[in-house]
Length: 247
Image 1: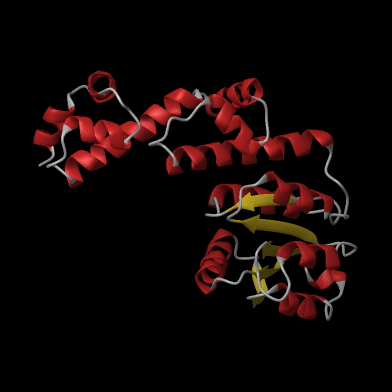
Image 2: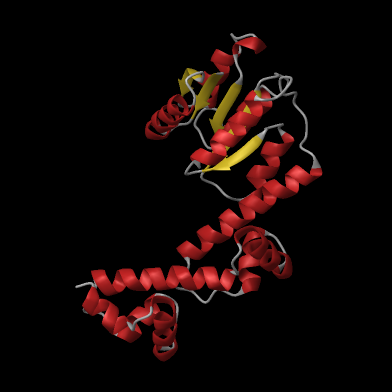
C-alpha cells in the first residue's frame, strides 16, 4: 500500500510514518510533505495505480488539506483527512470532498488501522463519492462525542449546562444526551464527575496547601460539603484522607 502524508508539523509526520511502518510491512510512505501544494505536485506526477492512500491534515500553509482533497477529487486513490479541529463544518466539507474517513488528532492507532484495513480489503479501488447517510450520521456522532469530551476536559471548572454543551456541537440537548449515553455507556454528568474528581486528586497531591473549598471551586463545585461527599463516593475516602495517603 503506497501512502502520501501531508502535515505541516514535522513531529506529527514523523510519528505517523512510524505508526504506519509498524502497522504493516506492506505500507510504504512514498512522500511526506509540509503543505498541500508540494503534496499535490508529487501526486500530479503519479498514475492512479501508483498511489493508494493520501493522508492529509486540514490546516497547512500554501494549500490546506480540504483544497488538496478538492484538487484530487477525481482521482481514484483513497483520501483520509485528519485534524486537531473537531468542528462539524470540517467534517462536512471533508465528506463533500469525497474522503473515506475523517480522524481527529491525536491519531487513534486502532481507528487508523481499521480505516486502512477497509481500504486494503476493498474489492475495487475507492471511487470518489458522497458517503451514505448512515455513514455520515456515524461520523457526526463520533465527532460529537469527541467534541463533548474535549469540552468537558477544557471547561470542567465551569457550570456546564446540557443546553450549552449541545449548542457547542450544534445539536439538541435531548439528542446529545441520548447519543453520549449510547456511544460511551455513560451520561455526560457522570463523565464530567469523573473528570472533576481526577482533577481534584491532582490538586490534592500537587497543591497540598489548598483548602478543601478551594479545590472544590477549582473543579467546578461551589458547595464544598457536596464536593466532599461526592469525592468520598467516587474514591472511597475523603479529600483529607486522600491527601494524607498521597503525600
